[in-house]
Image (cartoon, rainbow, N blue to C red; front, top):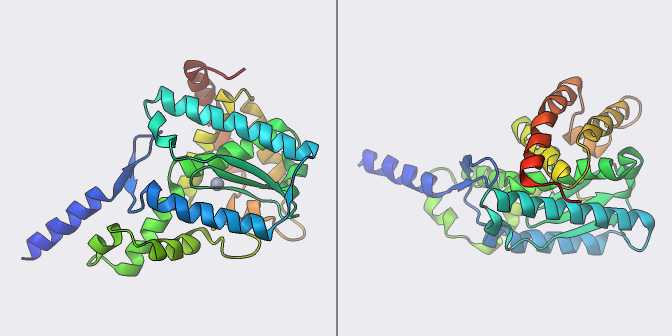
Length: 269
Ligand SMILES: [Zn+2]
């Protein structure tokens, strides 16, 4: 009896795994994009109604231009990997909001928000591409969905796994809010694990290179971010993205591969 039960749970766990379209790695994921995206888009729209979106300025235009290039790079890269269909339900948007927090994020389905407070640190298009490429990579690699799945597993325990996969939208919505932490007014994202951060750095550098930016400039951006620490309060982006010497050294070591992949995939002119 016990043996069957364990077998059953294992089967559900296998079914509940999703493949990362870029690395090919399997990860725990009970939440399909069709379940996840409506919650994501709803939270995103609510955030936009509660915050001031900047339009028509030179900065807003830069966010749009760089975002469009990162999107085109993601499409090109996934197509190259034979995973082009992965993005079919994405509804890309790039918004600049008037908020002094040093922050940026991308929700599942391609909803990217850049806070005006991060612009003095991004400084230029390559800096913006570093941030947007990194945030898009979290979404592409399903890092948020993994966190939601882990939360579900924690909440329901092993016994009711089957029920979790049946997809109750209200429950999904609730867990989405908890997993992303976006219920708060400022829209602070919960930190990702160190492993997820490294993965997003790696994929982000590749997207940046395919989009036609120089990944070497990512090192300058992270160094500027690092210099921002110490004295006063820690910026939100810093608290979730520690820009220490280890991270910067790791980013440096990832750059040659990002450039090599971009050459194979083709750099957007
Ligand atoms: Zn990150």
